[in-house]
Length: 345
Image 1 (cartoon, rainbow, N blue to C red):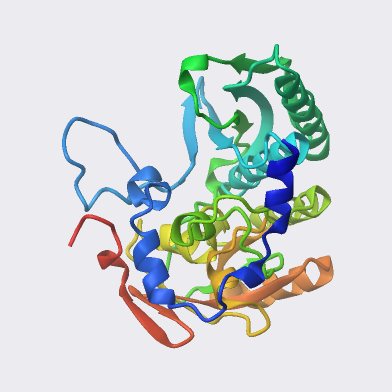
Image 2 (image 1 turned 60 degrees about the vertical axis):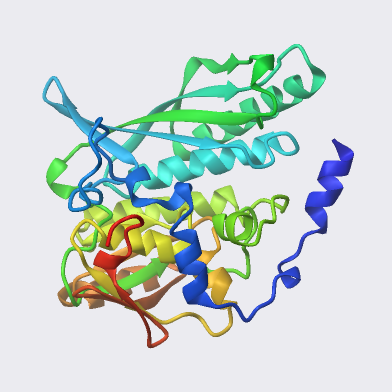
């Protein structure tokens, strides 16, 4: 246990060369199963998926459904990074991701249940994980105003699963007060401006980029502060209520680049963005630090959006605009989005 923790703390971003071939990174990460579009937009069947429908989901990881005339939302998230060494923060991270994802659709998170997978509660380490995860769940629920089910955490353990990392899986249920005010993640119109709410950091910790591309499995958790998450999420709620956004997509797996890619795929739109000169390009594009949301804003509402954000004192910055289909980063073309789906030409 101690040796693992020391190994994790040794990693710093300086160990990765700063000058990277961004195009090579993108092409390699496209082969990552965790970032494949069919993992986000799917209709599973025995037939081979049609490339024209692989990316046609409007709500990404949050499912929307109607029950007895009431619109509801549900999302499920799993997390294994550092659950064995810092279970409270790891659990707060997965809760923050789920709540941010749901709020981005215009839904209000209401209740959550959790499962600790491959946890031996009879083992002292299993008890440590369970205790920390419970604290993380309770703290996140208090911060976000979410009800935690009476049986806070369920457990599943089978020794034949070795080696499997301990994982927490949460299911978050939410309500939708006004379906007409829902905001989906996908880009809506060519020419819409794209902003990022939150800050970017020189942080690639525990990212798909670091683990899949550089094969670095042990690194610290990404930048995260639960109080910042509360402020960001409350701000997002107000923006949606005011009707100032055309789309909202939290920066998730694959970082900003792949989050924007997923936002463009449903409608075939691309994006033209400029990176921050003060942040490493690989960290800006592929880092998975928390507390960031990509939002689309119609040019006619840009002034109102900027005024509101300036008054709120919440960090934000313009990153680019939606294109007809081409993907450009710092004036370099990466081709067209309809050619970015793995396995299809």
